[in-house]
Length: 441
Ligand code: 5AD
Ligand code: SF4
Image 1 (tube, helix red, strand yellow):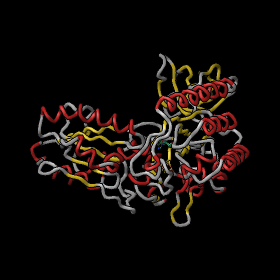
Image 2 (cartoon, helix red, strand yellow):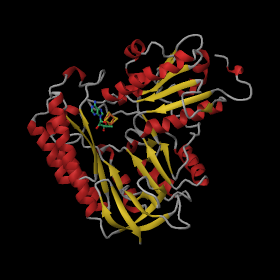
Image 3 (tube, protein in one colour):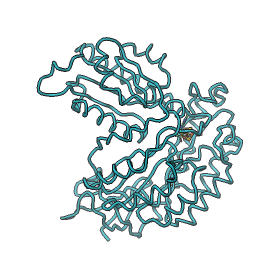
């Protein structure tokens, strides 16, 4: 496609994002790469010249959703054959052959390390379909400032890829080896964000606390970022239990800007299953870590990821997961039915738990978590928290909402002179499992 055909404005790109926060951050990177090359963003596919989907491959369901959406978007290309349709991200990398077969009309398939070349690829896609799924163990895009969305919170990529190879997970295959963004690039990006009024940064990485660059480990990185004026709150996700070092715990405990919330994926509460998952810790080690974190940071909130129905999980293993959840009493949990993924170590083991049984176990896990989340939030009634205001609350006129340090959504009545970016003290008057209703303290 020759874009000189659009005098006076660049070609328009519509980009849709699926999956985790890393993908949200990657889409901001892709937007930056394309803007540099003269493209402009489109809000809708209707009048876009290029339609891109940034995709997730973590579970089969995620892939199915994207395939459904792709076939829907294909109609824009049928109506206007000059439209270029492309698929980016983890699915592009995961099963290219099956993808190209199912979505034969794709003009462009680009994996997570190919984004620098997107402008060339889109340009050439008019002549031949373009595929670039090479992984590059050095690519961090450190020199490209992402096109961050507006808001009080910004996502900043600290590291890319994963070296853990949990038996169920495609991430190491689709995102490649672990690599950290140089600290000076992170500092520059966050200083720019602070200058634009951003108050909170969320550092991202598939195993973000495995961050290390020369002598700078993740704890040291947090301390450096805490020195940036204007940034009031620092968060990170997702850490791996095996990389929760003393340096990191110490930074969380002593650096006031680092917020008291951690997402600590458990996956299973059975040692046998954890071993088969190759998670690298036992239940006792995990519980000892939880105790250590809570000793160091008494106000800490904690969430987790749970997979039910992994290969070989029997009722006893499943009960063990419920047992650990009852012991830890998480503030929240993301719960998943095991999804067999090609290329992973567990793929050849196959599925041993029926879909119905997975669904039943998932229901139990969710019910237990809802009960715990509610009980934990009700226990906060009467307490006061500093809330970083994000904007109007979703649920009602005249209310503002934001997050407490523990990353709980808190809503309170709006008042003159208070707006996004302010930190106000709010006292909890009622709670559900998902949010807190407050008055100004
Ligand atoms: N099946 C189900 N859940 C998975 N996750 C990763 N791979 C799979 C899979 N094959 C979950 C894990 C991980 C989260 C991001 O997704 O719980 O922590
Ligand atoms: Fe996947 Fe395990 Fe890496 Fe997390 S740590 S991205 S679950 S392989």
